[in-house]
Length: 524
Image (cartoon, rainbow, N blue to C red; front, side, top):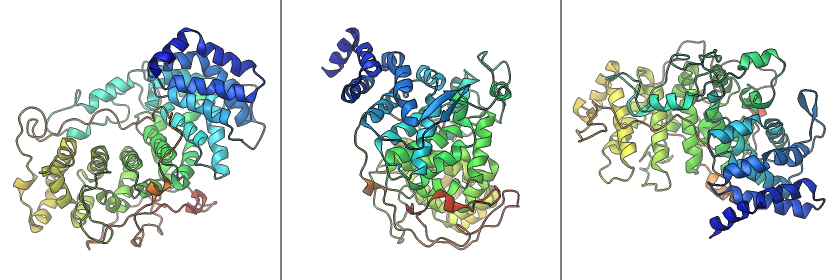
């Protein structure tokens, strides 16, 4: 009945009337009610486009820009005030924009090109970071919108990017035998991407490329979404926020920014490392918030496409990743009971990240064996009780097959009591591991994610963000700087107890590195 009422209201011109009231009414209460009507209507999937086309420009010009304290001066927006007030009107307006931002490529194009929207979002988030005021609903709406705007960001210069990426993920353009199986395929940078690293002509839709726009002056509008300075804008949220929706959105924005093949994603993957963002994402793996863990794991997987990042993740994050596998022991060493609060999608994301890090790497795979990871994979691959789902089983088998293919690891596996037969997936009829030469069902889609409409006025209890009790960090995890240009250090052979990081809310990102420290490749 509510959906029918919304449709009838739109047919009767309700959206246009709400927009008129927002533009003309001097009464703040009336404006709040007008934006509340827009927000309620925007939750309906069939009406999002109507809300977007009717209300977007008014919301940006009459609410977001004034609240962000921005005024246009020449070709750029300039900040004319330092303080932002979190009014009900502002919360409602950002809620509308968040809601419509999740309705596909048309919405992304419209929002990215909306005059002043990206500048407003960045300014609002920056003020929230500066004031350590990260947990409110309006900030959540802004960060979730930002996450959606950087989804498949390469499409701005490469319109076929999503279709091609989906084809690669399902094996449509891959080679048989040694492909990535259930974990999809990543092309080498520029290979088959059409746009190459910097958006070459022929892959674009006729619009100016990033390089052409840079020649015309400082970045503005949509180009502000993938500038390197967006990384230090998001990392304080990852470090300090206690709102799980906002926390997941910030990690998801980094996940999306690092997911593509074009040059901005290549640069951002390196910049996250230089800004000491990798350990912050690893800390999220220890939280009791399923979607946050899933997003953090996939963000690490995307970042691991950078070889130096992969090296650091393999050295310092294997314990945290292994600790999120099905059946992993508790910090005290006791077997973990079945945790129904962890979804199969989260387990699959963790295994996919492990696959990226461990494949063809003897040292990291040896350490994974020492941590008990092979035993955990064997259990989740077989999963006789069916607790984790077929996807987790398939992913586990794919990683086990990849581990056995590392010849230097085979003697150690045999010493641990494993045989080759135990790394051979069972035969299954149809598609899947047994029916496709040892490859599991393809992972669907690229490693990107979107936030939902955000119609809820509440968020998960902060108690869900309490991490497991942190164990003492191993030597070198938090206190040593590692240069990615150095040769790979040998991992210690001794087995160590799994550790679970805890997010320290009293610590700011500025404390993670000295103000004058050089931007070197480092874990911390």
